[in-house]
Length: 84
Image (tube, rainbow, N blue to C red; front, side, top):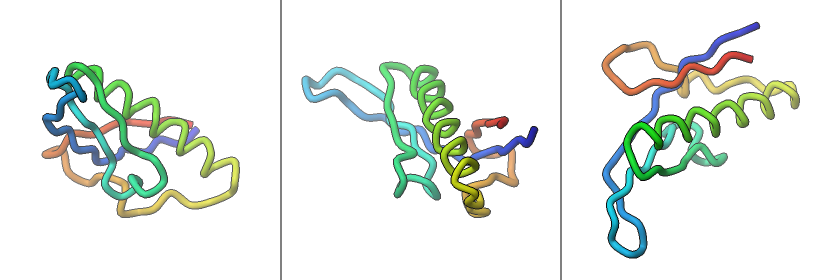
């Protein structure tokens, strides 16, 4: 098993009808779909964790490397741990 810790960003957002929401994304992997949202900050973090897990699974199965700039080296940011 191998573990990866990804830097994620969570920002205030809103639904189309104006209700508050939160957008969560991994800047280094957003180009391949690492972006989601939630009604609460906690839900957005849970959802981005699931998205990142799917992306890592796909990269590993395809024999591709996890981009180093996606991994976090600091505890100052939001982070998501993915183990495959």
